[in-house]
Image 1 (tube, rainbow, N blue to C red):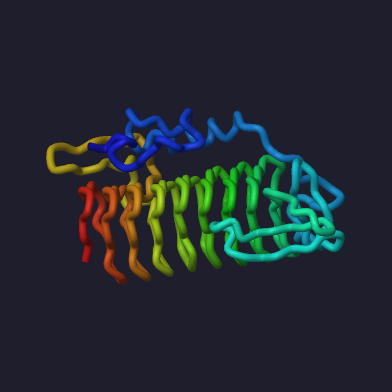
Image 2 (image 1 turned 30 degrees about the vertical axis):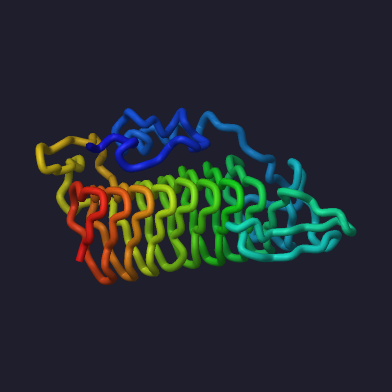
Length: 266
């Protein structure tokens, strides 16, 4: 009932060593820090990028190299739909990513996929992996130990900590995500908060219709199955598990525990 397979279609997941269908859904969070520690990362190094300082000029990351945008022509569209286009003269640099002036990178273990857009004011700590055609918007705060999939959105004033986005997951506006997993195609309404720490000390347990399961985690936010949607200003309590295609009505506080596929939480 609480296996990763129950919540996510992992048939095209880029990280099968981490997201194992037969394991409990929260096991990926237990293993995330170790997994990220074993990955290879890009050389986002001086002089064009200084650790912890705003990028001074818009840059393009292409084929392992950083290029200055003033030498190129950039067309900015919806990154999640392949809308980032960079040209050198009339030649399209297929898969080029754009890092806009004012973005900040902290630490050396950051990997950026193809066709990514990172807007001014985004603050990204390592280790973090950002998948192809993902958009990191102005004011986003990625606090490290984060794995962001393909075609995702980390939105304006959204804070993400020790969290996994599967492909197409979007947290577009004013969200907080702590120690959580967003399934494929999940969409969080503006102001959604995935709380991850109980007032009462101790590990978080998950109640199902048949039993109570111990997670072994002191911090655990929400596990949102594929295509879950939350309304604006909704909140999930620590240890919330929402099955596939569940809906959360705006301004709702979701109780901890397991909610089956197709639930309507109001």
